[in-house]
Image (cartoon, rainbow, N blue to C red; front, side, top):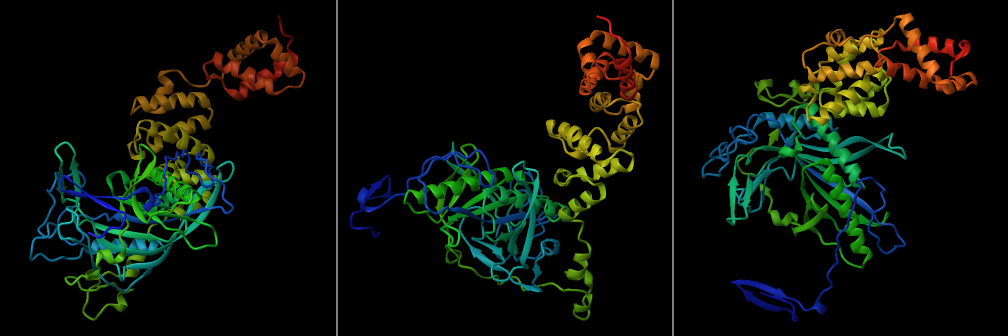
Length: 555
């Protein structure tokens, strides 16, 4: 083993350790950095030496999206989450000699559809390659992927996020997509630290993936997280990937570096396998600050792969970064070139369209994408852009909102308040999806109509909503009748209650008479408290206005 002249070798427990004296190398000193915010431009808590030139972050992403398909990419094994270990493994998945790959057409169509939605150029001819690396959960010793000529190239993803001083401005940005390639997933290694064993589950081995490679067009964690959320919504709308990050259906690797604007990009590190958008933002911001600190201390950033620890909020070294030569790419000899056709007219003579992947047919099946849906909601219902984000970003909430709008005459902005605050708030508290809501769109619309027509007050409407949530199945009208929650509209009864309030609060009445009309709302609140929110507010205001201008109060 070759070492430097000053290095000494030690043999401990049959392992070789190399010891370098202090003078022979200059380590980068890395200390803990705490970042509590993922916002662009947020001031780091760590104090570092001032620099005459400001370093900025540069972020690119590699995203592995598990294709929503009933079977794997090259075998007929089913795909199912949480199946018993090694219960979904074919001979090909286990790399038994003599087995050959058979390409899954559904996976090809999913990749083409995703490429079209992201404005990519679809290559009419793409190729498969072998990428060699040796992990226990990769039984063949290589992964079938598309390195030289992927299925789609040169796309863009336009994403939006809320920014500005008040965090209510919609900022639109675009990130370039280098390529989308098909590849097979590896298995899963399960480490048993107590027994010092590693167990291998090959259920995931061979599952179809789309790897989306993004250019380094982002500058901070918030931008990267917003881009991933937008991509997640697009994939879910297309039906090409379920996008559940907690189940590993969407895994993100972040390439992070820092540099002075106008100068070449710095040495990058890769933070692997981040499984939530929130953790992605934190990991990137931490890594930007860590690299900035290293450089400002005179150190050197290492080209390495790192892992993110969500508990400590830090990234930690895993291994040196592999280069292309380490993977020894070679053409996949068992798969012919993948050919897709622009339209039926371009099909070879005698080929049925059902046997081929036709781009034109896939383009016709593209659904309404999230960005288009947001613009439509803003224009159709005159709602605020941030409200359109809330509706679109929550699965099923747009359909729920529009179903309510079909059955009520209330203003869209008022309906938004109920859907985004009351309904979504209750769902979040109980960790439920929109489809699991005990209150249907028609039931909510009925409640809003009762309020709109003056049958109940706004405070009673919220009370009825709570009761509808608890007693699933009861209508709002049933609850109002059973608990006698209808508006009190009897003039004589309200006259008596208002007189009581006027007599009890002479100072407030005096203020109203002196021109402070805002105090009238306070008196109305006392009346509503007296009637438990059931008084007709229009009638109450009219009575109080009359009494505070013409009635003499008693002390």
